Length: 320
Image (cartoon, rainbow, N blue to C red; front, side, top):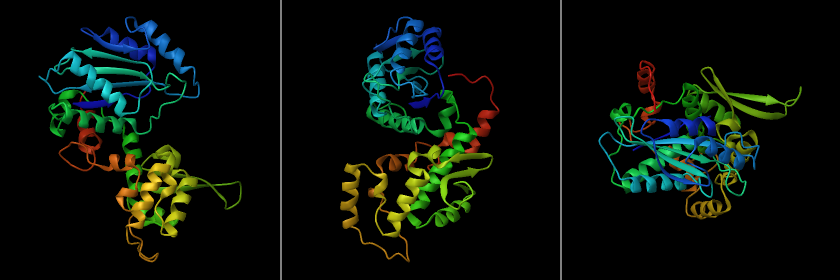
């Protein structure tokens, strides 16, 4: 089974698409009038207006099964519910629709990223997290895993080159930061990987105000890569490294307590010989994203490789 999250969709257009496809079948809906896409969109929009600052309130994803695989409607509905739960999309409106217009059976899931209490639901790296959750559910329900050579059978839409570059910068920072003590250390390590570090200064002074990273034609603010990579958070992490402490500024109180236990059980290296932070002290999200996905390459997800992207560019009229 393969997960594909479609960014930037509106409730109205996504609702119309999933509802009006030939053979579309509504499996489950909560908090909306799922029997009519116009009414459905009205209900989604009404709740999203509880948090108008949430710019991308429409979550739209597809779960594609291996060609020939036909789980029951009850199983697919349960898988979709667990998929949303695995992404932290809970206490909110959602719709689950089955599509049979392709050689492979697939589900479309719409959900509101503003929950029933008007609180925003986190969507950072949701596309990659969705792939991980889909892999876990594939194993749990003994489905056929989607290896890299079969991804084209599921009509999986590739990430844009800009998204690929953003992911490369993210992974490069995560890999490099445990070895650094200063921003200059980080800058040099990233430069060796073709990533340039740019600084923003306050007025005409030398006081740092922001940080950005560029690769190729793409440039991202640190906070656009991940909120943990804003200038302030990077400075806190590097200050902790200089004192031979774990990067606890990144962690929640529960994670921080665990990191302290890991630190006390780990022999610290002298400042002159920086040692990587033990993986147990890193955020579970970071560890999850750094694991290889199910692909033939093993490292970078197959959908992110240049070979796959070039292959997809040659194809036309790919739908989902």
